[in-house]
Image 1: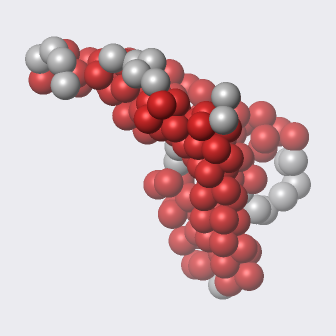
Image 2 (image 1 turned 90 degrees about the vertical axis):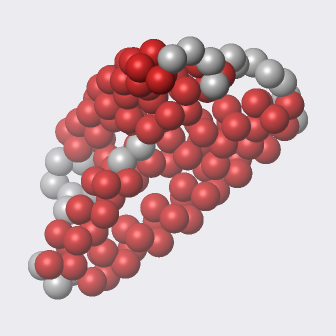
Length: 130
């Protein structure tokens, strides 16, 4: 990695700010689009988009050196780390379990894993075949 430790923290922090703001925007849009649902579609959408993006960027990085080490920190660790919401996924699943909504909790876990892995693969596959 290039730059000082504190410089890297600042790069990741700026990326995290962008990713977190993006997560809030997407999640809010989804919640407003589907206002009467009790399923966490916003978190699912954010995680699938984030998995697609990290698969694509990771695939591009394997083929081409399109990012500097600082660029990798900014996009992969900062932006996408701030954008994806595994902690929100865990919290929402726990909330479903605490209300004994085992079916929705199970559906949430399966959907997050299945669609997240599929999106990462699609992103990676797309990057490999551009």
